[in-house]
Length: 190
Picture 1 (cartoon, rainbow, N blue to C red):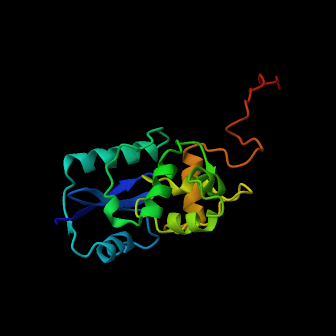
Picture 2: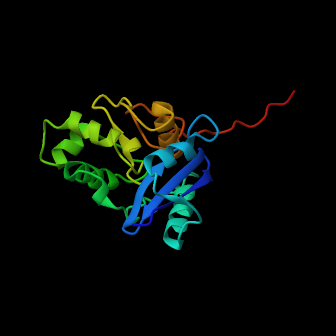
C-alpha cells in the first residue's frame, strides 16, 4: 500500500495530512518546535512518502484552512481509512464527527449516544488516540462541567481552546464577547 504525507500552513500553524489508498490515515496539528510536525509524521507513518497531495487531499487541505479561518465546513465527507482504528474508537469518531463547528458535546453525551452510559473514560481515551484531529473534531468534546478536559494533540488544551475560539463555540452558559452586542456612543464635544 502506498502512503503519502504533506505539511501545509494554516492559521494555527504548520499542519499535516497522511493518506493511503482508502483515504486519510492521519492528521497532524502544529508542533511548537520547527521541524517537529514533519518528524512526528515520519515516526507515525514510516512508510509514507512526502509529496504533493492528490486532488481529494488537496481539497481537504483547503477546507481545513477555511475551517481554521472561521468557516463552518464540518468535514464529515472527508474519506478516512477506518482500518487504522479499533471498532470502539470508530464508533466514537463517527459520533464526534457529527458535532458541527461552533457546537460542543461532552464525553457523557457521546457515551449516551453509543448506548454505553459508563464509557465516558473510554471515550476520552479513544479521543486521545484520534489519528485525525480537526477532521474528527475531538476539540469539540468537553467534560461534563464544561471544562476543556484533556487534549492530547500538540499544544494540549491551549490548542483546543484556540480551535474552539476560532469556531466561536460556546463552552459555558456564561455569555462571551461574541454573544454581546456593542453600540458606540456618539463622540462628545470637547
